[in-house]
Length: 220
Image 1 (tube, helix red, strand yellow):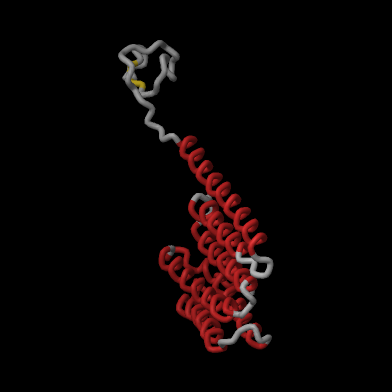
Image 2 (tube, one colour; image 1 turned 135 degrees about the vertical axis):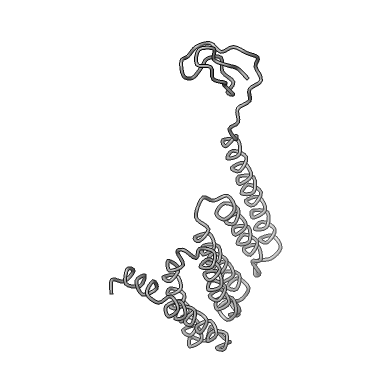
């Protein structure tokens, strides 16, 4: 640790001059910078992201090549590509991304639903994604919002708009059933009920703060 004889302050940084008066410091070396190596951490994270992406690209190309050589009817390699895509999304967006936790939860669940819909389409479009995954995803999002509301109790009313969006999205389960894409009307009805009652419960129990939030959002 070095000392400035003029200012009489101790300097921890690895420097030869006082940052205040630019006078030469005295004393032995040995002061270490106490700042974390943020740049090094960012570089290591970026290297990890890029390594996973590089390996995913190689694995995807190999899967597509083997699929092309072995079978032209069952494109299982596209399922591998979708799975690798989601792994990279989780790493880049959820683990190492800078977005807020709220957008991470919503984004990951929505992307997971889309990936599963794609897998259903690639495996013959038997409808299991729209029958089971879609309504289950709506209920999972409702549960995630409730957990976020409990975690962020001071600003719980800000989650009412996502709840209302889920009510609208849950109605599509009925549309899928009428179109013949959903083979389980009971699960679709449950998802609509969960989304609707969750929103109504928040609106009624939230009282004035909930109504003020709706007025602020929709100017009514």
